[in-house]
Length: 357
Figure 1: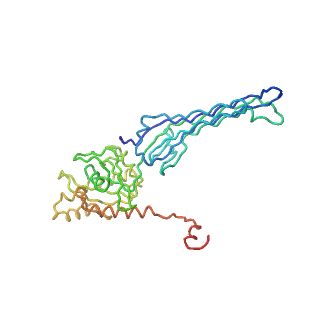
Figure 2: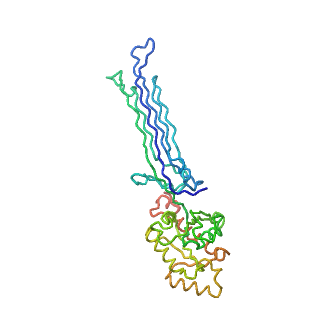
Figure 3: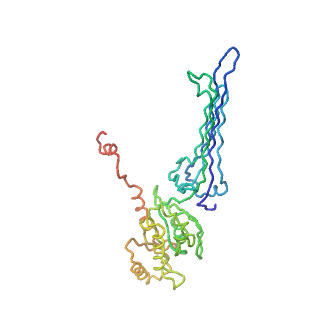
């Protein structure tokens, strides 16, 4: 299936039905009084987060979603039927914003979360509503209210615990294929990966985390070079970034330190919050470095890069060092998942202490 992470759609809610001005006309019953019913409510448009979807491809081809109008009221106290609502299923992580004003309407972060994006119009009142002690035969009625109409922009940011970033051909897709069941395309030319891939890494029973592999970044990615600004946003919801560095480039003239610094600079230029996220250094393709040179090359890279954080030496192809990396990542992600709220409820604290609330 083609990966689509942007779409523009038109949503139109239904109009409310008109009220009816009618009078009861029956034999032997003079002055029967008003019996005009109200109009029905117009259909609304809702968005629901669906964990089984991972792309906005459906909204590329179905751009207009229009709900039905409510029925008009009728005589004999008959109220108009309300129209059915429309429910649009979208992948989790979708940001819904107004295309004209740019205001964010909702973010779908939880499965089954239902958000109203276009409200249907209320039905109009029939003349039955206007009957009073002084006006026994009202003739006024009201029309139904129009439904909302919006042009919306949908933007998908994948929900993952860990994000992989690095230059093209650094081994990101090979790594996600080695530690998860994901099957990304792997080849020996740059930009083999053209869209983000998600993989679930299982550490043990009920112990897993999600990894996002984005296409390779190049210098100028924050300004859009290599479509970098489209892919960097998929890393904004991650808890941890793994900076993959190729320690054995094909071209001897390529400096891995300069490439790593360029990636860090692009992160800072695109979003300072993304740059401030926890970031670990993963030195890949050590199987292509002679054993007697590995320690020297790793220490030289860390010294020149001036890196103070965690460093992992792996080979994604032979899976050497991947197990230690996976366990360390899971321990880090598990701590962030179990963060206690800043203001705990005192009622639950009392129960946990064994005292009555």
